[in-house]
Length: 250
Image (cartoon, rainbow, N blue to C red):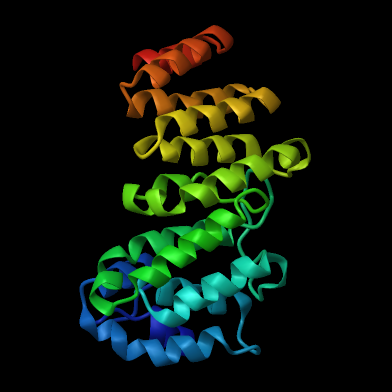
């Protein structure tokens, strides 16, 4: 059995499994996951190991709210294209790196264990770092929807800066950046509807593709405020039948 199989290809009863998610999510409730942490750290940092295995070790450490996992996310976000595992997972639709989407899910899943292990601040910093590159790296619709209201409140300035900075990159991005930025703007609805509407409007002024407009409907669905209602009227006026159906919940 390989080192990887021992660490992530074996459940906590010692049985082999090909279901990595099973191991990750069992670990959230099973304290025996801690026994695997040193091995996972060694694997993640082993330059001779396969890139995919190093990446999945990072995912596991992050999901289990380990400092080494969060630190690796911070390092990856600081220099995305230099990350050893960059491009080891490719999105099928856009043919771009998909590792940051998976890391954002891991950071999100770490919530409960981060509270137990005293790493909540590192979790927030990991999210901050990921938000900071969301104008240039692909997140497969995961990042914005994974930000809870408390995290959004703390990261609101970073979210605004990323959306604003991303406006100039929309037309040359190799993926649907406009929709990704609208999703980030929509995440702000929980704490600042007016800011969410303003930023989403800025994005739509650059690109108002049907998919982006549909995603912008989230702001209207999440708030009954006058600002959201006015934004809904705007979306109905510029969108197609799909957008209007989304606004009415049909």
